[in-house]
Length: 294
Ligand code: FRU
Image 1: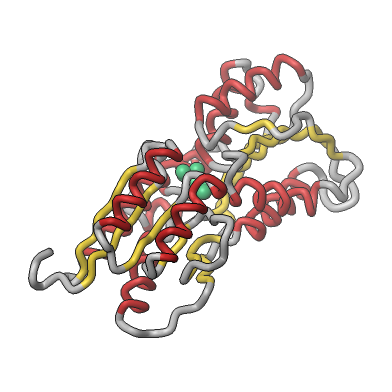
Image 2: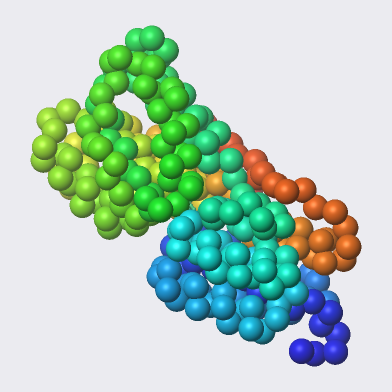
C-alpha cells in the first residue's frame, strides 16, 4: 500500500455486464479520484454468487479497512458479509440487501417506494383509481434479490386494489436481463390476445419486452414501464416513445464511498441512506438528456 494511501477500501460488485452496474462502477471510481488518501479495490462477481463470495473472502484476507458490497443475491452473500463483520471490517451494503442487519450501513434507493410510484402510475394509465382496466405483464428481476420483491410489493399495493386489472403472469423472472425479458414477453404475446401494460423491474427488461411486442407488431397497443432511468438507456427510450415511463434508481457508488470514508474518519453514519427517485415521462425525458449532454 502506497505511503499516501491511508485507507484501503474494497468494493465487491455483483457483475459489470449490466449497464446500470457499469455506471455504478464509474460513479464510485470518479468519487475515489477525489480522495487521494483512498486506495479502491473493485472486484467483479461476474454475475455468479460463488465468484462474488470468493471476491469478498479475498478482500477480507487483504484486510481492507472497509468493505462495500452490492450483492448478486441476498441469501448466498449473507455468510461472507457476516465473516467480514466478524473480522471487524465495517461493511457498507449497497443497493441489494443481505439477510443480516449487523452491517454498518445500507445505501440505496427505496424500492418499495419506487414500486408504489410505478403501481400508482400504472393505475392512472389504465383508466384511473376505481376504474382502471387492463391486462398486465410483470417481469421480475432476480427472485433472490430484495429490490425485485420490493418493486413487486409496492406496485401491487396499488394495482391489487383495482378489480379491473388482471395479472397475466405468475412470478416470471427475467433475472434483470433484456434477452430473458424478450423471451418471456414473446411467450406472453403468443398466449394473450390482449396485453395493455408491461411492468419490468428494470429498464433493460421493459425494453426487451417492448422489442418483443414490436417484433409481433403490437407495441402500439401496450404501455411499458421500467426502472433505473440511465440517461443513455431508459430516459432515451422514454424520450423515443418506446417506454412510457421509468423511475430513477440512482447508483449508490459515489454516496456509498463518501459514507465509508466519513465512517473511517471517525464520524457517525446513519444506518440507512436512501437515495431519491423521480418519475421520468415524455414530459421531462428530453430535459434530463440535455442536462446529461445527450
Ligand atoms: C443491475 C440491476 C439494475 C437494477 C438493480 C437492482 O444489475 O439489475 O437494473 O435496478 O440491479 O438491484
